[in-house]
Every structure is written in structure tokens, then in C-alpha cells.
Amino acid sequence: MRTLVDYFTLFVLLFIGTIFAKVISDILAMRRHYNALSTLDEYREDYPKCQTPRGIRCCECKSSSIWQRKLKQAGKAIFECRHCGTELYRR
Image (cartoon, rainbow, N blue to C red; front, side, top):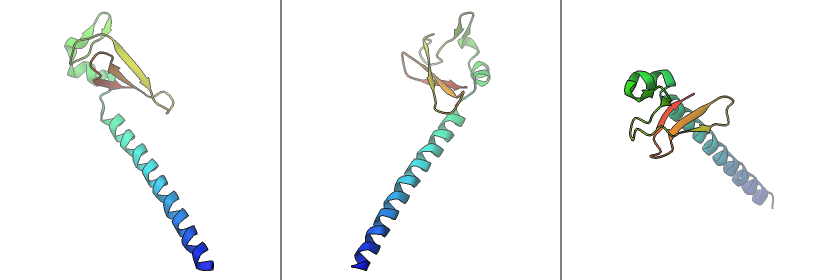
């Protein structure tokens, strides 16, 4: 009977470890994605024609409707075009 409990315990620990590894992997992937985006200053340098007196435009579709998607980390956000969905820059 003891071996059945040992196998069950091992299974539970492996399951928890797999879930934990997936969560950590997702967090690291999101961090890499966030850091790969341009900052606002870099976006302005890369697309100077997208800077208007009224603000920033999308470099793909030229829309000025920009959406701020806040992240769970304090003060971090990704700005994306509401028309075409292009992620433009990060804060």
C-alpha cells in the first residue's frame, strides 16, 4: 500500500512542477515580448511621420486611435492600434 501512496505523491509533485514550469515560461515569454517592443521615443525616431500635433498615429494604417493595454506590473503598458491591432510601443 505504501508504494501506491509514493507513486501518487510523485505524480502530484510532477504535476505541480509542470504547472509551475509553464507559468514561469509564460511570464518569461511575455517579458521578452514586452522588452522587444519600442519605447515611445524609439517609436518616434523610427516613424517620424506618425508624430502629429494631436499625438501618435499607427505606422501601419495611419489611424490615430491608440489603445493602452495595461499589464499587471505596475506602470507597464503596451499601446496598440484599435483599428488594425498592431502593437506600437511600450511604457
